[in-house]
Length: 219
Image (cartoon, rainbow, N blue to C red; front, side):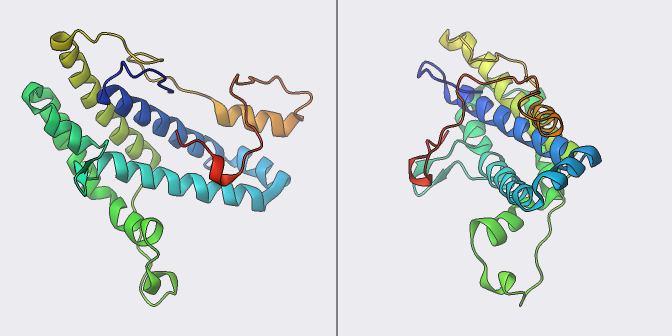
């Protein structure tokens, strides 16, 4: 979900980022956890889709840790994290939202995702990368991760609705309060299977352009 107005709150931006991450998790699952799609990718370009797979996997882990595990600030700069939101809106937190937070904390401990991010993705741990030490593992499962993200979104949305009553900011970003499930992987596999020229495409108005790494706009 893209937010293009500064009228929205930090809660709106957090919800939007979680929505984007949920879309990416579904995309990964639909693409790489499906035998038919894996077969088509192997027939197209195994090496290319291996690169894409690793990039998506690492991005999902990095963003999950950033939004759901990071502290409220780093070097005196605030993070757009669940912890930051919990502290800022603590005065309107109710028992139902606190129960969701307790559920999230339990799930987070079981996933063991942060040590993996810190050692393998966030920092190039020499002993791990040179195989002097055992490579850390995470316990991420798609359904558990979606559950974690969805509950985090419920907290932010619950706080957003409460905050709207006291601030009057009742306008929501594109997509509103509901999660929109996109079938990007199905579209990709369909086009690969039948040929781009013959496939029925959903062309985004903001299509891809030829752009170098240093000029990529970070969303």
